Length: 298
Image (cartoon, rainbow, N blue to C red; front, side):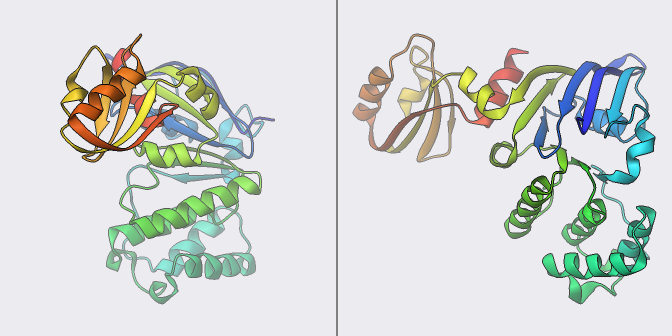
């Protein structure tokens, strides 16, 4: 049984086609990255999955239920718009959402203790939500999405606003939820995080799916036309369009996509004339490079 399946799902708002005939499936125990540029239709799709808005056409099946609302108690959701009950205390909020998801009081209290300790928030459990920083408010919302150990977790930009330490904690929790068999689908603009976490990806642009599949298969399909290069000195060689199709230069580190038919040996030769090269490696393209290449072509 797939945790989530969308078949030919479409949604429009007046003259704007937000999502067009989208198909995707997420099996249990997998992390699925739902990617795309701003305005691609990611949030609209996730809201349709959660039944916040309904599709104009197509079908959505969750956890074996053809009527998704019947499965929502087994689903965890972190929306894009962060919103909390501002006057409610932290522990009260977690108790409330645990009860909504059917947790018994004793089980809920044990889980709340565990999760507050895990995120280092036990000291603020009696504070009102409005007294917390935005990052801490987001952590509480994340906890409301996983406290009942859902079978499907849907998250819209879960890393937004988190510092590196809490991002690491959240990634660890992603993998733990996956290990117990939960399916996770999440949107993000952080391609490096998606590349580390995802088993599979779906990339949409202008409401349409343009790329889908297991991440490693997708990367192999692009071939080893990318070069990771570490250098000091000039980088005029990056402007040579006979050799370089695209590049992402971070100063002393650059990812290069070779032009079709170009020789990596020629690129290295030219680079050595202008700079000191400390690292040169041919690799499969990064997810960031795949994202840019695919979106610009569609």
